[in-house]
Length: 440
Ligand code: ATP
Ligand code: MG
Image (cartoon, rainbow, N blue to C red; front, side):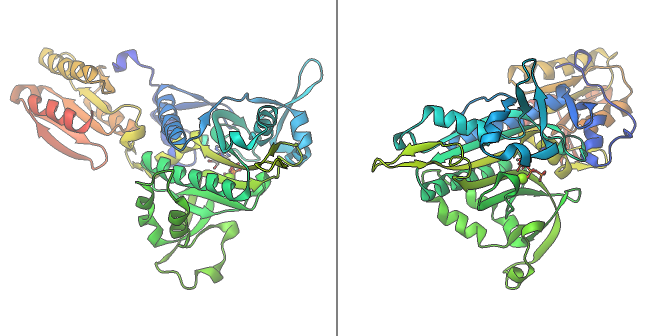
């Protein structure tokens, strides 16, 4: 993509409405724009990241055996009256009446709707286990929307729902999601820590939050330092194996959010106890028959008995992750995108667009990247050298290939790795090798 053809509305100054780094950087790099409090439009750079996070999430859900569907954003109030959550949800819920005075709502979560789909379509244990998920916009009329997309009112969530014939089987489904979450956050370049958590309005008796560490996080978290090293435990796990063993090992280390923290339990932990701030990027719940009972979602088991199905629900904050990843990956000059979610792999910067040689070499590299399907943003604008380099650091793609008049004269060009800020000098031929080795 050539920058002169692209839509990248950069902002030079620190936006007044933003308090934290990720929000400032998202606005300055033209990733999103607020349309009303806590509601955002996603501009091209932001949309690309959102899509990548969504894809990594879906791929891991599919690998775990979950099946994608799509439920609507607007739900009928009746279902929430059936589960008794219609009143409880209070002012967070956006309630709507249609022209026939029918009460509707913009879904803050989907336990009721999925339970309705289940009871209308599944009656027998033979169809279980089942895990259905979707990625869909949610609305919660948060008291204090802030931190940009991290605490929005409208936000994108991946939510999955599991159905099982027994408590034991439901725990197995829960374990699969636990493992999937450890894997998928890591694939986004993050180091998640799973922590014992409260169940809140979703309800239930077993729940973990997946937290990334950041000083701008909204919640206090406590964990055994050894856990930072335990992520690799989940790398090679096969979903069909015995997951409980791994989870027991992981959860034997202390980790708890503020609400669940108990200093008594931390007295004999093996490593250092760390107290810090964290961002909740995912949350999983096992809640058994909490919704299936009042909503009468029953199945017949092998003995022919009829019983309410056992359920769990599992959320990933897809749009919150865009901000969360920036919180975990930036420096004073801008964003440092992990390769896996970066909107482009590389900035190709032509320092002098009036120099024919520079143009020729830049075009050669640009065409090569396109042929290799490498997503490159080619800065072919007439901006000053300083401004081009500042922009490249701000938008933070993993690599910058810099083409200037001195370089073409000596066949000696600069390539910068954004993460280390290290610059190496390569000939044009070596650049092609570098591209093959690092960007394909
Ligand atoms: P929080 O404690 O941050 O308010 P929650 O516990 O109410 O979140 P869940 O119901 O667990 O949220 O939703 C699943 C995931 O959706 C959360 O882990 C989070 O990543 C994301 N999420 C929840 N609320 C918001 C929001 N207002 N803006 C962006 N993402 C959100
Ligand atoms: Mg939560």
